[in-house]
Image (cartoon, rainbow, N blue to C red):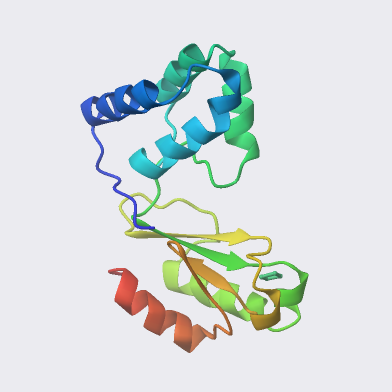
Length: 162
Ligand code: FES
């Protein structure tokens, strides 16, 4: 999924109001609500965490605990496109380390490092459920298998500006 990282504070507030209007104010909706915030805003800001905590009537610490536990929830914006390189065992057996090194060389930073202004973000993940077709990579919402450095470059050429 390509994420809009240019959401202003006013837009974020409007999105939160829309989500709150559509979501019951119960603690059981905490995770789905945070996932919606992530999907619509691109990350879950401190202000959003406070507002969500108030809406579902849980502590801010509880909300923060959920945000920090789930890898797909981010506390700060990253590039418009997120690239996840699977580093779990099955993918390691078929060359994901070379792929990860290629991505790091291309970005100039280690996987997981957030670079201001970069149009894409890359990070390690641990199993995309595509083990038989590794090395596996997710770009946005799409999972790709048998990814070589050359194929990754081709996929990225369609997705991001470098
Ligand atoms: S180990 Fe990489 S997709 Fe499962």
